[in-house]
Length: 571
Image (tube, rainbow, N blue to C red):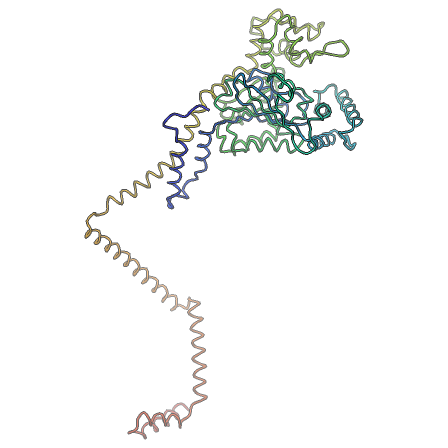
């Protein structure tokens, strides 16, 4: 990570102090959520900046990373029995290495069962049985032949992926533990450099049984803590693999996303891609740090209707196109490889980087995918019409011979034109500029923007308190007078409120609206009637006369007559 400027050396402490001041003011506490500021702070001071490449299987994520680093590190193929987590970090040139973590036997068995169900192969799995593995391999090969090749249909791709999974388990059996994931350094494999280790991990059968790869690679793009993360596809046939990709998108450690979309080959966003975009927007740690890459753009060169659908999609659903790119990872990456690492003596890679793809047991050469796409680009894309290149593809020559002849005639200039048309160079330039020049200032700008509102609120709050203090008298007698005046005002307000309360209560009682009063009155009335009945039942003239005589000893007659008069009147 680039070292912070002296004035930012205690950035975390200073920002946290402001947050604590804000939280300490009870009147302000609920006015603003500080979690966004805390996330922005962590991004600004974190030693790592994780850029996740997310998308569907076969969208070209791995190829795109290879193209960015200009090295063939990651495995890229049509089949997808599983997915491998890949983390690529910076290392000095003499410290490059790879750490490999394998799937457990239980995980592999689960994958085999899942893909078998998808392919409607219902035999119970026993991957430790050579006979079962051989039989399953034959089934897969039969499906691939029926579909016309391993990349011709989804069923063929899954069959190829299952075949690689079984082969990988068989070849790496001693490295795979039953329940836990075994981890190895490249030295334990006796690899002398990263290229050898990457070659092992990139082999399809090995890649199929690897759970996680950690590359430590020397490349300027990875400096300043940048970590490239490649994950399983969001439409993985095994749900836990797809869930892994979504969880990483929502992870607070994720700082940016390269969203690799297949819309260039499909003409529309898949359901999973729409869900992916929603999850990206929900992660406050990502903000607007999203690069949208429509890979496999070369497929639109040969289908005008597909191209129009893609343009309509971009216009209607992607308002901000400042970080939107159209690429062909395959043409761009291998274009660089052929240009920089091969020559006419190697038949422009047919005898070197494509040698494994070219070999065929029957003696006839196979055609590497890049060669097919290169020939198609030259003959049918229309990209060369306004260029000096007058290229012809002959039907009477094999694809490999056409490829070799065309490059022999036009060489490096044609490859440079191919690379430019692939869009890879534009994407690499943009993301390199962002990560090496724009990223760090933007992180600090985001933090400053988030802090601004909180700081303004605190400032206004403290200025209000200061103004109130400034307006207060400073002499004791005047302060007493002011306090007495405040007390008088408060007492007056209390009295007015009490008066209003009494008025309201009396009016409520008068109109018989106070249920509690009415209830108490009824109880009192009942008690009075009961007491009166009790007095009447126990009344005695004799007792009354005696009490009156005791009270008026000198006028004994008068009380008696009064009593008789009262009794007569009452009767």
